Length: 274
Length: 274
Image (tube, rainbow over the protein chains, first blue to last red):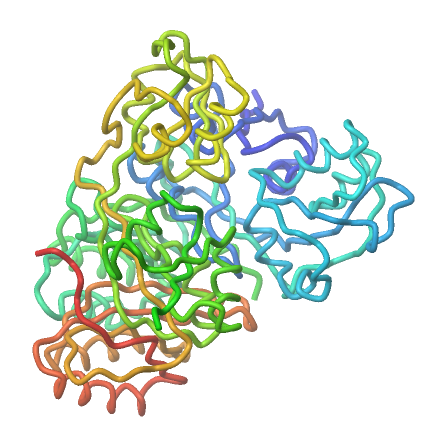
């Protein structure tokens, strides 16, 4: 039986693309309107795996998603780094001078800021979804409005691409994680995501990082996140890579003693293109 | 001459409230439609100070705002911690059973998640602004729709509050920083915001935190942020508090030698209520 993969957004979205790249074009998917809904699909076992964007080269971590993974005790079992391309699109026949406003997700507007600054006559309007704007422009035949979205949205909704690749950083990428409810231990892995809490003693985070360094773990990411129950106290989410599982196991054993509430969010293989 | 204070959002917003609390009820304000616009007001000298939300007890850092401060070389000259209250509001005469959808900012929806889970008949719809939804409900007399917004929005737009204080964590607070374009050194301060970059050598962040700890600095916040120009390399934004300015100056001198590109984002007085 094929596993069903929950994705955030609709067919043709970047989440869908990642699901196809990892599990094949014919893999059954479950479209979810929000990251919350995606988690619910996993908890209900309607879907067995979920693909979730977790950080972006430009805007950094998608912080609420860290909380979702943690609070629902989900396990990260894989990751994928997808290059992101943004295109400016509008109704056929419109030129950039006809465009009075661009609507898109704040993240997409941020990622195309340099391009947009060159066209100060265009008003920027935030919307909750990139592809939904493209759909609305096509359906309501909106003149003077452009969307910033993946190319597939132009094809789906009958728009023309006015400008290709308008993202500021050409090698913009988003990191996606694959989530499941149960831990399925794998023999060999070279990356782990950990969460721990520390008391407020001076130097406690430094001590923890010293252990990781001594055990030959490379810190690839650190994210402090407020503890919801205790305002202004922080939990730390870290990603580490390593050559030998034994090194990771040793560090883990020490951290378990030193930190409060160590939680392994997942062990998996490093998906970052080198 | 009174300085003009740029705020994100409109009169009655939380940003406005912070401006009033810090600079008095009659302080001239400049309403800005986005954080980008707020920065532009400062760069143009239309406003001399700007109030910007930077992190929240529940959702963590507002990451794009860190990039705005850094890229535009703004200085943090003050901070304020404002308790946040969310209220569910709709047209007068409507009960919670009449409500079919709640529209609000994703952050507000997140902060009221527990309450909303108790009312599964209500569809959650993301919007870009909390108060704008309240305004739309009032203006278009929308039945069946509720907003999550500050109480002042109900008063302004003729809505009734259906439920008080629906945020999950009752002591939810948002940290705001006050920004200006020029550094105006103050004699005495006990908090600093720093940004530095590190090479990828194992243990380099641990070494930096050891210095801070040795110099009696307390790390209150650490945030890794991708370097825009160099995908998947990180800069670190840290906040530190200390008892003696001399301790801070010593740590700063050492970090300046050890880290690449140390930048002081601001020195100011700790505004966190103890």
